[in-house]
Length: 169
Image 1 (tube, rainbow, N blue to C red):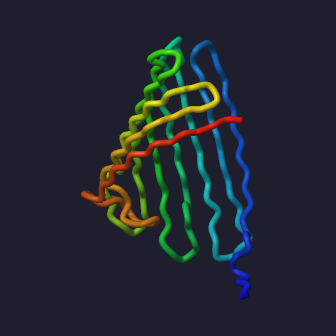
Image 2 (image 1 turned 30 degrees about the horizontal axis):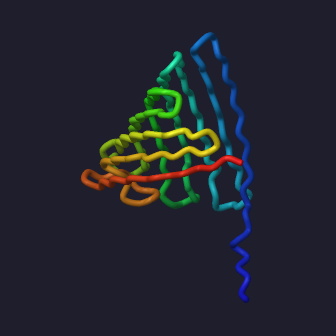
């Protein structure tokens, strides 16, 4: 068999975070960095700030994540993403939880006109049977990126429905 030397992983990274919970509110911050020893690579970074409020049967939260130099190689297309998400969940009863999330992503590609913001709506219903959880989720994404490292485009949309069963042992 052939062995390809480019299969080596030349990157290493770390993440740090901190959270504080004054009462029903939780505030969290995080930072991730990846260092690549390849001369032609650039080191991506990610910063996150989030806040949640939890009451007896529901929770609501908001988060902002800023990713810089994503999938960037020196001399080629670079991009930065800013993702804002708001989410809510509700425990309808002991077994059933309902949730919704809305995200908006702005992608900046130097030298390119900025496309429309990508918008994603997710709806989830889960049934908890103790060690087994069954869920169904629906996702509607509008104005997605045309490719991994280009700006978003109007009309590049998708929908996804997923059914999942998870067993914990």
